[in-house]
Length: 201
Image 1 (tube, rainbow, N blue to C red):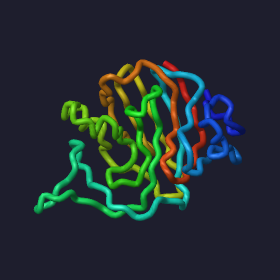
Image 2 (image 1 turned 135 degrees about the vertical axis):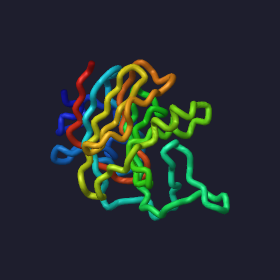
Image 3 (image 1 turned 60 degrees about the vertical axis):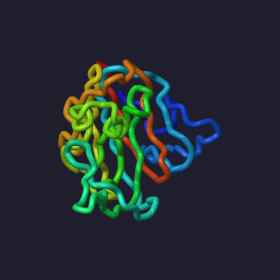
């Protein structure tokens, strides 16, 4: 069923006094990068979620971002320094079960979108957990093109498919809440969403 009706923010809770930062435009949910996050009124436990998203030309400038290895660690050069790549900084995400830690990233880092940053960077997590929440492949479309997420939550297991490629496969999220609202992250730059569909399991 749709969780965004394409017309207005019915079913969502915009930040107080910041409603204008999230707007419906011709079936597209547009965010200008300002203010706070947008949350659904309803809570969800186990579900399949489809979200289309794309970046506009807007970005936060060129920044050096780390190259992340398949095990979730950061690549180091022969001098012991972090290996980086220059990117146009764009950042957003989809919060699952009302929890910022269980956020599926949207960004332009070399590793690609789909990473669960809150778990990958948590040193208290096992190496297996941190590796599993690191994207297997960069499956992002170029800026300005639509991307499609298929996100599946079953218990504490997460699968993320981006543009037909599985980037996260049944990763365990220890301690993730049993249920909670879905959120769209505000992180300083424009982003657009459409076709937000959910099937509860």
